[in-house]
Length: 389
Image (tube, rainbow, N blue to C red; front, side):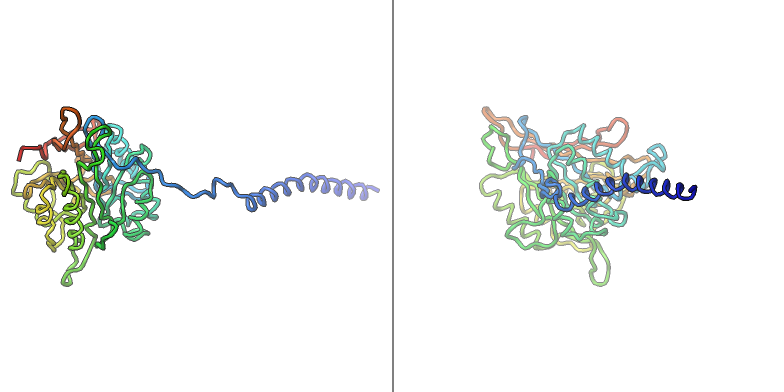
């Protein structure tokens, strides 16, 4: 009798347990089945790019401000350590997040109308996923809803995406005005495009570009006569550049800027001139001189060129009446120098105020911001002023 009672109690206990678990198991199964049969409609919607108002234009106060960010060399975020920094910067705690904080600081302080990322935005060898790295690197621009344009350096493609894939991806990111290549032209590389900055709303130039920006792919590495060298801007790119400039300037002549990563050979000669800023390392350029300076000079309205690549150079120097300016190293995972703060360049363009409306560009200024406690402003200079030349 005792054995029968024990068996009956155990059977009832097992039955109770099963009766309790069965509804839970059925609920989980139904929940899983419902997610398969009826997925979240929002999750299935295509991702739509958030675009800035186009065309870009001068502000109501007649100004347009560009933030140049050169050589972020972004890796994997918090896991990617800084290079060449002083102990007080953070030591072992210093990472890509320092680069992100610096970018946020500058955006908040300067409120730029456009951010120009001038290559080596990510450091391919340290980025396990190129797309993920780009999203983190460019993140603050999208977070603050600032229009931005990017070109490639010589390290971006060393991760999981080709140069073409990188430019396509960046062109589709939020608030990007980047383009893969110009329509109607067969040009070398990826990331050759023009952006026109129109007059303010309410001005006579509301439908006219008062400032023309050209972004160009200077390549990465190539082999010439068996010797490895840096890339250079090719003839097809220069042909597009000259043709586009001629077409735009037919009706209204406007100042022009060019942005590319690798400097041209003539920049080396600026050592012997009255440059402004720091010239601390040799100019790392191609052994090939493709005639970029001649093309820019012949265009007649190019006032300045903005470069990256050589992180310890942040100077501006004059070649044939055109200022060639380095951005200086921005990123903390890029090589640098201890006690030489990371930096950014600001390009500030102002319009002339007519009797009734804003007119043409009056002046172009530039300065740099250091990532120190004060976000120090240094080396302010006038690059061009109307009627000064």
